[in-house]
Image 1 (cartoon, rainbow, N blue to C red):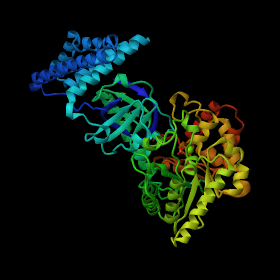
Image 2: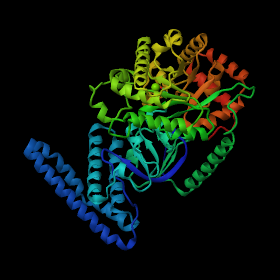
Image 3: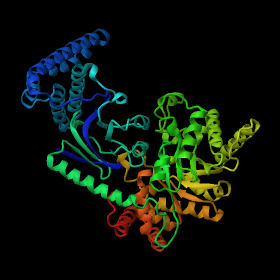
Image 4: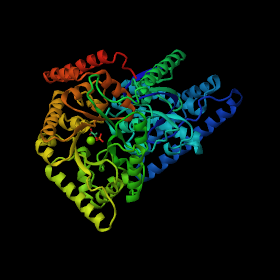
Length: 582
Ligand code: PEP
Ligand code: MG
């Protein structure tokens, strides 16, 4: 049994067979075989090894012909391994004695050697480990033949284990077969993480290197609430996991009783608690969890997980689904935030290969660059918003001119609709995400022109502290408790107050229970959180008094170090809601 810890990003516990996604995705369908077919299975192993050897020889011949003898020699080492009697007898033993399937036995044995090479820690041995993984893949390919399943065609429930998953790949995961997933990389606010929570798939990211420790078909446990990941759990651990599951359930039952209670502090300060969504069907879930509306609809997910451009009707239908899923409540639709990691391959190919995409042509920049795409979306939002409380929000706005251009386009689209006699919502509010430091510095000027602000702490932190939101190696810098971030939020609140416009926080900071009292104490009256966090955050708000929140904000503002602020907020949260575990 091996236990690892990573960043918990989507709550819940899943136990199941691992599907290890490498450069090639395959899964081992069964770990054990009935004893009576052992001889048959040994025969299948030998046949596969023969085919592997033939394949390696053929590759060697091709390489010799094409690029010269010295390169073809690389394959000799592969061949030697594939025919190594010691290695083969180890695999045979696992099949004969333990009734392992040939797939599982080969994977187990080869990975054991690969790990030993890796542990030797120099470049030469790391390459030998890579050779062994390569051989493992070849053997599995021959053993599994037509049985290989791709991620998109999975039929059996699995836990997906990968170095990384892009938001597009994550969007394509089927919830009924993917019980959970874990990745070596990724950060708390990465879009893959946000998406996992939207799909309600228990997930952990940023575990660090572990794939060498696992074979497809191994039993694994994913605790997406605590961040614990267990490979090959023993019986005691499985019992413990069951108890943890019960505990999570009782906390969640307690919280769900607050569904119909108003989101307000103990001394009666109303706090509007909204949901962040990526898919239209989540609007209804937010309503059921007791939210006050949708504070952020990330519409770019209409583009992810598909390979054609959504039509105006696709946009319109999605927006109507959101509005009807959560009727009579405010809904903020954000225009496309495409770019950086949130971009399907077929769009990326149209643009130059920017080496630093988070600073490249993304979000409102891309919308203003591709006017057809932008206008199509705006037409659909304006049409869908008739009779509803909808606001349009532009992402990543970094200059006043950019906002003015976007507003101008909205007006042009309104004129077009008017000419065609198509009904639309002419009073629609136009706001911006505040997520670029330049915009914070210019918040006073922005506040005179926009209808509302929504602070996007995920990007604001990454751009202020120069810490990639998806990179676990810099996760400690990507910290909402950094005094620079708190000072920036205070500047935005101040600017909004002076011009009397609403300001909310929709980055993951507002889904973090320890940060909520601070935000309220600083003057925030609307937050927008991941749907799964709605009950937990409502509980925190209902335990709080405004007086306490303001005292906390005053103390925090006097602090100089993120570390001190973070531990203070954690301590206060424990006092406020003693049993805060999910
Ligand atoms: C943010 O940056 O905080 C935000 C809410 O937007 P996204 O996570 O979609 O970039
Ligand atoms: Mg953002």
